[in-house]
Length: 319
Image (tube, rainbow, N blue to C red; front, side, top):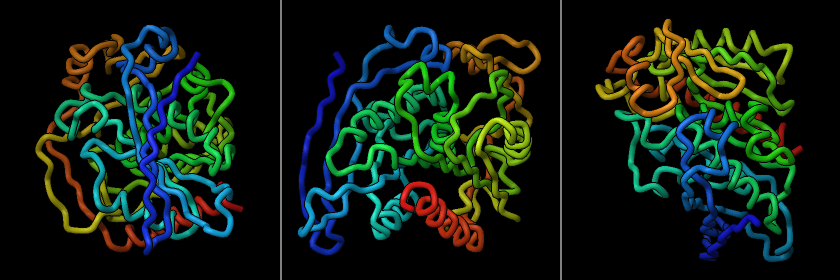
């Protein structure tokens, strides 16, 4: 029997009129997609939490709301991420801030992507979805997922059928909005859910390059409800405020294309050896990555991305 732990820290913000709840639930720590697909029940258990914010209507306390679940990137939750959540709340959406890093006492995975893996975060997202789907103030089939960078991978690959069905065959996200996700994968299985998927990425991104996203979207056009927007003259993190800077710890994946097998193995470039643990992943990265990436905002792209995100959520889970 599945157990979910809900801790309600209820506070009413007199300015925004929102109800805030901390929700804790059980997830696990799979290293790879393969672990999720083939051996999920034997993965190390992990307690994870997030913050749920619900619009408060004193005249109708039982009202149900569509919800946007947000997933941060390798640097953790930043100001521009919260700006999106605030925008959604002001529009009448509930939001859920998934805290995969803090739940594991990790601040950032920029220098070591093995500390909290994409597989673990996708599992976290689905375990959160299971809880949120049963919340009395949330519309079960109107829950979208959005994420940035590493969180963009979570948003994107949470629509991949082999992963989704291994976790929960009965639930899926209503839509997926992925900001500058890593697209440098060639999945042999092209089955994705029919929920709308949209990728927003910068033309000049050298952390998670745009071209693999273009190619992947083209490959999936006849299999998934997917589209992409590439912002001109924009780098990784184009929707944040501030100028460009170099992150010396970040991996540039511009020369990487990893094969993704049906059972979730990610294979090294050239050698086709599964990167099934942290040591092998680090070896695999040596073949195609370099250190040092550019990150920073582009005002035009930022404004356009916020406008697109607003319209996307209204169109896919509110109308």
